[in-house]
Length: 307
Image (cartoon, rainbow, N blue to C red):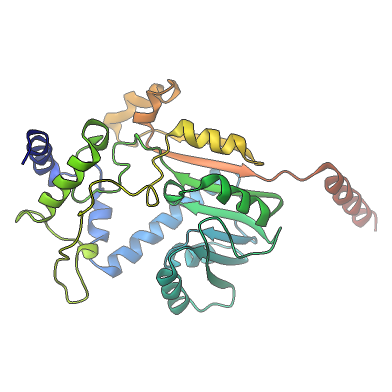
């Protein structure tokens, strides 16, 4: 093992039991599928709080869950008051699971392409995209599709984070060292993840086990993180993507919630430095109603009011 790998392995072992990148709730959720389902409901609550805070309507709306995976959040949005929900994802197997688990006639699922949403123009009122956009390999094209299927006046809520977030590589269980991907090479980091994964002190979670309950042997074999899995965009990169789209965009940075990290709040206003200390991003994109359509709607409303 190289010196850099030895150092990172030592740090990972020291931080493993008090993993700063994985909450107790997440650790418990990964213990079994039932606990994970409860955790996903908490994610629904988080999205709904953000939707209310940033004035993104869900109640009574036709909602698109962009990157729905197994449909757990889609079903949650329906229970939260959406008129109907359609979920799309590029993972065909996940869509099949979603279709099997959720059978409401107000909840439908479709496989999609990385740059194509299988819906007609102006067909949804609201788009929710939670913990997905950091995985979108071609964000410009995806935003074009989102704009196409969203009705005029509709809004899209994106929850994501930038690449310099301390745990951006999504390796929480095996790599509890913040900013490891910034300090060390991806090759070093992934090699250490593999060493941690096969250490006798590492406790496998539900995603580490095969159908027979045995630890999978083929994890962390790559030497770089596939850009088709994580796009590695910084906050400034996301802002450029949104700025170049047809949407009106507002980006809301969130500080770390720990009381010990309260001092980092002012850093969110400092260019580049904010990349390291922004805990999360909520982005609201709005498809503006064109003036002619708005005037027609206003006239229709006036006529209806006079009757």
